[in-house]
Amino acid sequence: MEERTRAYLRGRFRDHYRRADVSPPPDPDAREWGYIPWTTGPTTMVRHQSLLELGDLSDFLRRERPRHVYFSAGRYDDPGADDMDDKGWRDSDLVFDLDADHLPGVDPQRDSYGEMLAAGKDELMKLLDLLEADFGFEDLTVVFSGGRGYHVHVRDDEVRALDRDERREVVDYIRGEGIELDAIQRTEMGGTATRRVLKSEGGWGRRVHRRLLALADDLLAMDEDDALERLKEFDRIGDGRAKTILGAVSEDYEKLQSGNIERGGPGIRQLAKVMTRQVVADESAAIDEPVTTDIRRLIRLPGSLHGGTGFEVMRIPRDEIGSFDPLVDPISETFVGHDVTVEVSEAGVVELNGESFTLPEGDVSVPEYVAVFLMARGRAEKGRE
Image (cartoon, rainbow, N blue to C red; front, side, top):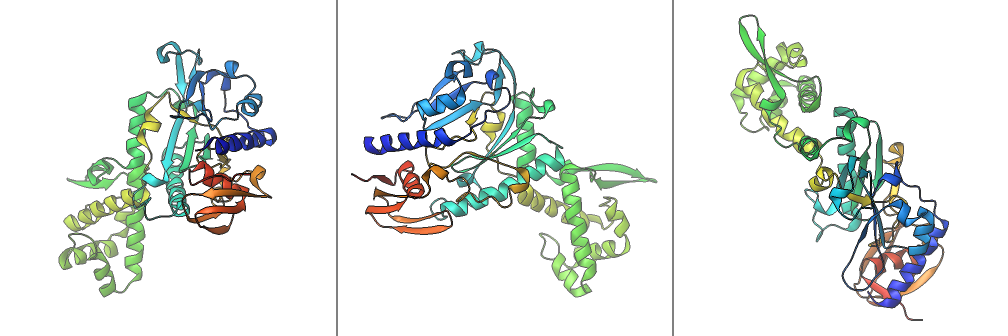
């Protein structure tokens, strides 16, 4: 990035902060703060700062106009101490990170930026469902990172003291690690015999049970031949097992409702095993493990600008996630309303603010939010005056 580009972005970031109302996270004085300035050479973070050292947050942002701004998930007795061991850790938010370009099925070489962010939003919805339905968390803050995806901050009292190993257990659950049929069933006595029953009261057992019942309802609505063909789509279920399963579903639906997967023998258990794999693949969330397990992690400040896109790092109200558009809503009003000339070095299509821009190499006049995006991503330099 050339100096004129750096100076332009630094100045326009300051203009954003002059009009922005950036609110800090809870307990800001107990958190470590860090930022990356607009400097030449290798990227260097300034960290181990307390809010006392930075001063008033709004004044700091206008004065320093940083490229990136972060605060710690952890709370400390002395957040400004240079040595982590001297900070005096108290507790930490439980933080989740979803990077769109790291998700299963996403190919950064093939998929557009918008397509990757759409995949990230789908993954976010799965994560929120797990956090709310399975864990019962209530104090959640959802944030668009301004770059590749989304962050979720959980601040329920019972999670803040979790250590790394305990947080890793949460990660494993959300990612569906080790979730197989044996892990979500129990053995019960039924008269003189034992029976296997899904743990349908909650968690992955409830999710698999719900999927099995939905399939059973579909089978009962079909004619027999179609139902048998549907069952044979599942791995290792042939004619014999399909007939046994359909008979069990037709004759003992109430037992399946209670979670009993003994009736129907090996066929119904094979179906439950395959269904478990499908449910985990469909409903787990591909969170970034190191972010969640790191009790000292620094995470982006909502309301700040992302120096790699120029987008605002945005808190998203829970009931507005469905309508949130990451290519429209995070565009700062500071960059809307006038055009800027840039020297494009990487030609291509940019989709922002509901419009598509096909950009050739060379000097191009574009809306400033497009120009800032291109410059921040290293695809253009500020045009010469």
